[in-house]
Every structure is written in C-alpha cells, then in structure tokens.
Length: 192
Image (cartoon, rainbow, N blue to C red; front, side, top):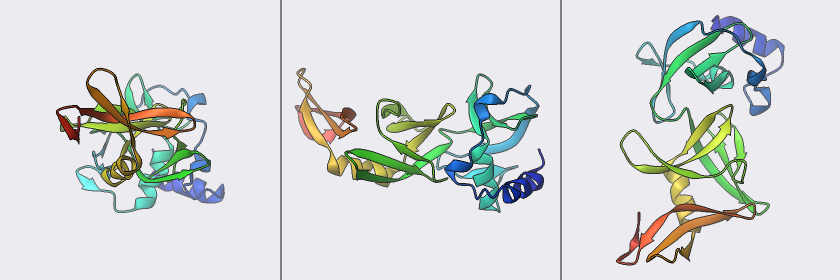
C-alpha cells in the first residue's frame, strides 16, 4: 500500500479527508494481502511499528479506507486488503450535539452520526473491563464515546423505572429511548 500515492490521489480528487470522501468500501472485495504493522490504540490514536503517526493526515486518509471484515479490521483499496490491529474500537466520538430532536456525534475523523434505530447506542466492555457506550458508524466500525461526551449525555439524561427495583438512565433521540446504564434502588446516585 503506497501511502504517498494515496495522498496524491486524494489531493487530485479534491478530497480533504471529510466523511464525504469515504469510498465505497463495501463494493471492493480484494483478497487479504496480509498483516500491516498498524495498531489503533484504545484512545483512537494510530501507531505504526510502535510509533505514533507523525502525519495526522495519513491516519485521516487510512481511516477512510477502514472497514471490519470476517478477517478483522482491514484497510481496503480496490486491489489490496491489509489487516491491522485495534485495541478496542477504531473510532472515538469526541463531540455530541442535540439538535432537530436527536443527538448527533462526531468522531475524531469527522464522521457525523445521528443516534437513532440505525445507529443505536449500546453498552459494551472496553479492554479495561469497564461498561462503556459505543455507537455504530460505518462498514462494521463503531465509535467508543469519549468520557467527556458520555458525561454530557449523563448530564442530559432522564431516569425511568425499570419495574424490577432498578431505574434506567438514558436519553431520547430521534423518538427512541437509549439507555446509558441503571441505578439500583439501594444506591440511587451510582450508575451501574
């Protein structure tokens, strides 16, 4: 995979790494070329051969070529597919905004996703074993909510009686309820 050639092609096509520049990865089905020594850390940072990427523009470009396959996380072009390592999730939702009766999230690479039935919030375990929200984004990729974004949602959250001695804490978005956690009757200030 020739990164400089990909960057040059992106410049010729007028792309600047925005979400609109994401190619039709679902249409590309090359054979697996092998493993590439790229690791996306749990904080969303990209590393190559044990070093952080020196050029953020390269990580932004590669993020547009990333999808999740049966082989794992892969960088895909029409003729190549390289597997990389991801510690947790490849994307991080770094901003949240409530508008038009819905929550909208922006990732570190400017993907914008509306919290709705197509992109539901779910609670999964991160590598440290903590239950943390995630949101599907594109091509099998999901974004982990940054701690500040999670706190923003908790601040706007409502509480609903779950009917079993617990209360759900969550938010409404696009006409749907999305749970952030539960409160126990015995510890009303602690989200489970």
